[in-house]
Image (cartoon, rainbow, N blue to C red):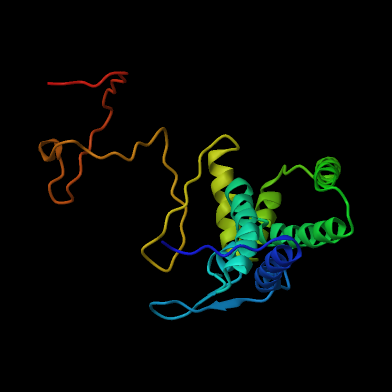
Amino acid sequence: MATKELTFDTDARQALLTGVEKLAKAVKSTLGPRGRTVVLDKSWGGPSVTKDGVTVAEEIELSNKAENMGAMLVKQAASKTSDDAGDGTTTATVLAEALFKQGLRYITAGVDANALIRGMKHGVEAVAKSIDDSATPISTTADVRNVATISSNNDTEIGKLMAEAFDKVGKDGVITIEEGKSLESTVKVVEGMQFDRGFLSPNFVTNPDEMKVEFDMCLVLVHEDKIDS
């Protein structure tokens, strides 16, 4: 049976803080338009270069178990931000580190932890409301291009393509990003609906050269139950 290492009170908090600081130091170097790129060593293949905060965070694993748990806490915050918003992972890391450090300082001084959490929640609500009040709604293609450019680490070409995609499909359209097979990035517009399921039988193939089933002006049956022959 694997042994468990137990750490309590000040020692535990300090180990967690050390892990948080180590991960945050690596991630926050990528923050903002003047952020630096990071070179990541891979166990296979050559190293990779990135300026994406969550990518840097996901590659970090500390040898000390207690410190690594602290790093994991911040890593989860960055990943959750990436899943919910698609951007802002480095900012989330910086905020998580600051909240953790200040929180530990107050707890060490004797402040009740539950009261501290309630205070943090009130602060989050106030900050979120302030951001909503000061936010500028996106209304033009140029606005979309600017936001997309910032989100793609100031890649103007990607920003232009994203603005083009949003302009074509509208605010209620669905945009899917796929890995390309060439060096060129393109926008493809598919009218109507698309189901990525393929055909059930090779007997349906109408284009044997490309193994495709192609029908023009066909009728579509939508049925809630399974259809058996």
